[in-house]
Image (cartoon, rainbow, N blue to C red; front, side, top):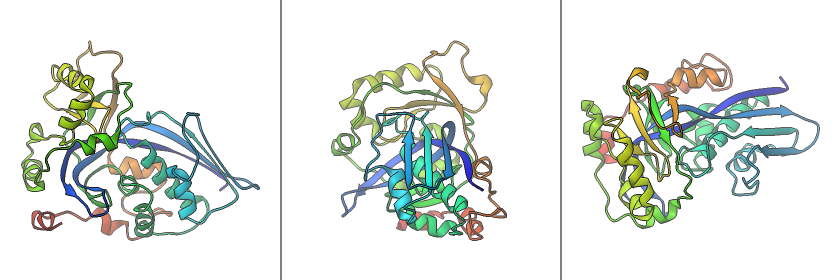
Length: 303
């Protein structure tokens, strides 16, 4: 195998609670992540030279801060690979494009170079690359905690389709977090999740983001006319509306909005040439243990 391709899917935060600030300056999150069909395309091939990385978006810096660069170095690969990423996920949109790219590169290089690293080992590596990278080793629907490194796969939510508005605003994640005035309790929003009260979901960062970038709040008001489930993803700038059936999406929706669907875990793994059962090579046998993990309410309260 000398060349391999895969999609690098984006994500939405179907809820996001911030429960406090950590000693390492990161914030403690409690969130429900969902992979969606908006995706970058990654092409990786073996070459006789060194390491060649390129993006279709020329504004992306390829330096020590780049998540793909970090992923390659963490695997100890310093020659013989060319990586090209065709970007569809806008930078700074709250859809996790950079983290998704890094996780996809970890999975694909593990396969292309026959490294035979287990999913658990890749997860350990991913924690040092970026906060959302561990989630993108799993995809589908998952509760994510800590600074993003604690991932519990869960059953998919009823929302199968989404309309996304991605305002052309350069949202500062740091500013949004710095202007956060209060923290919450994970038990309340988890109770809503267990009871299926999805219309009670919220994003704790919205208040801060809307105060800094009023246009985002206006976008949400307009989208609430289309759905009763409208939230900001991450720290912004994407605002999305959820629908349980494609037929529920208004025919006359704003053509600037992007329509996408939820990507479940099975489809996510098949994209990388594996399956959630762990039968295919490249992921390691311990994937069953991760897939079967479910957080109990007792455990969540203690995290």
